[in-house]
Image 1: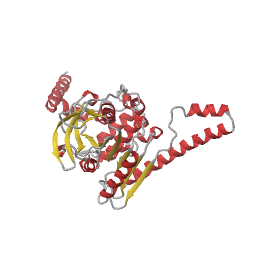
Image 2: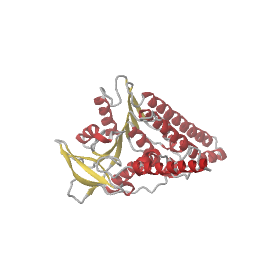
Image 3: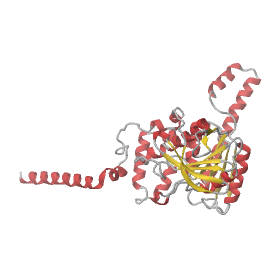
Image 4: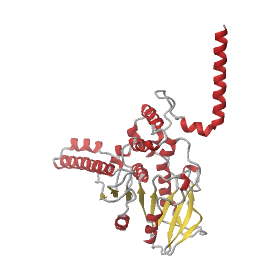
Length: 376
């Protein structure tokens, strides 16, 4: 009996200590180490299913009014402003560059940055140099900060949700520009229509941009610098070795995710049939942040997709040429809704360049200008 009472006291004491430690840690800290998927193998609600690439193709993207918040800096050829809009109904800031010599039919480029350290982040970080060149050449540029950065609302504590929201944020910015236009003066109420929109992306911004283009299914010209194009979830596991525990906790979270979801549903490499192009890809072969062979593999996948489209096109033409109405009808059913135009692309490698395309930065940006001059 005494042993039982002693055991009971120990259990109660342990529960009390656990409760006190939990209160000391606070909700936010505890949430950072608890997966929303629960314990490995436990059946969970499929809360991320609405964020698959196919699901997001049906998402009701809304145009959000773009406002100029304040001037950042005045340059000889353009003025940089902080802008805000409200994707997902939340505030997001970013940098807007307005050329001082505006073309009659203004064109815009949306720039999507890669990862940036929160402690040293400022609006425009990761995109400002490319945006400056584009603005000097007459393009309006808009670079979103993303949630948790700049003067944006906080990022979700759920790291999966924070990741899966980003294409929505980018697409709603594109739709805002396309449908509502852009203010060309801070105090003006007149929004100028934009003739066409292009995209520039770096590093993980490349993954966000390609995913956004697949979801949209529209031919928006894009240039990609050292993009993250490895399949999901390897694309995120790769970087987890920089965590304090060398990615141990994150890999457990990924394992739980894979038990609940088909990761192919979230992977851009599995949805190249939705990609239009044109795009231009630049990658330095001394890149230690995003290995250049990721781009080699991605380009091979794009080539394979183009071969698949050509094969379907040839089969349909052969059936029509031989007046085989039954086979032609079957092929038309098979390809219904698919884009069979080949994906137009250019791929540039730089043997001595790093993740930021240094020392070939000027060459890469010059190629971007030529690309946009032709495609926008």
